[in-house]
Length: 492
Image (cartoon, rainbow, N blue to C red):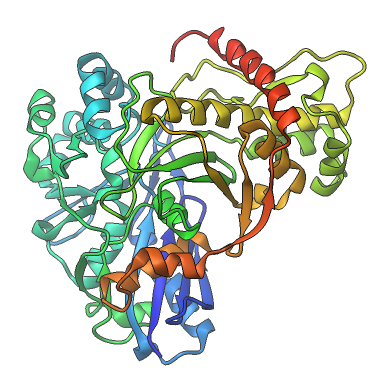
């Protein structure tokens, strides 16, 4: 039996899974993501801890699967996407992982925005933000000696893969799914943009080679035993964690939408073209397939709003009880509207925006308030979908696949179907990120020849929520009111 290992090096933890050749999950393991915060907005992780915790997760998964370790043919890692870390010529870490949550590079973000915002959006597909370009500039300006020692800036998944394989600094790589966060890439043409690099005086030699997620970057010889692996396991380049989630939901063809209904609520439409939004409401990211893109946006802490409400206003109630109350409340919450951006809007970035309820009276009860939170997140999604369809000329005939914790709520799923006016579906898999990486590993090592057909066989729709057309028409007015409330905050 041939087996494949998929690993997710995420912000809240590390998870690994061992799969057989039909992508049944045989065993899992976990590791910690140890985040450290400093007094000057630093949010970092130590590369050694990332590496060791990832090894712990993989070793535990192999042990739990009870397979012969030599049956593992290939492994692939996904990871946090918007942060960076520097390595030297021997693949040694010269900086900590400068997390996407680290905001020290605010001045550099502002400089990119003032000098080249339109060019960055048109070339990368994303706005200047707390991602690779501004972070690289911060290290160059504030730690020149460290910058000088840095052979390349990479991401955690590449660091673990390269160290496992014993790569050198001149073999540094990033796969193409990270390029929308780069600040310096010509994403359409899979290359670094000389004009942007020249404008901000960043040497191209400090940037890694751009590769396919299915590239084999080496074999797990150097410390295979630490990971519980046998000799000569192929290591794939892998992809970003969000993209791996989308792959694991089965979004491998245009016309599929994905709702990651987790702590940060992300909504994406799978499209066949690179989309640039100069208004900054949505952004474009490559899928693992070269001719397929995700156009998406997200709400910081979208799902966290549900926990906040339960803990602060409904102590002692379960989510099931709150769902029951929301289900008995009329669609539209009788005029009550919730803005879900409690700590500012993440995309487009508007840190001054705040959450609010509008339109409540003494006749509104707990069911109204809870349902309005569910509806507010759906209204935000409707703005994303409307903008993407406008940019792509699409028809809106999408089917949404919902995953993560929020997809367990039938009430919320029906609300989203009604607000968006399209079918909302749950799927048969919960292990989406590590499944995505296992598939990448199998394709990279030649055990799977057709990714699309394989994923369609493995991932299937379980339950479908069809939109109520009368509710959808009513919600159109609520969406317009919601947008007008956001507009009161002014431009991002």
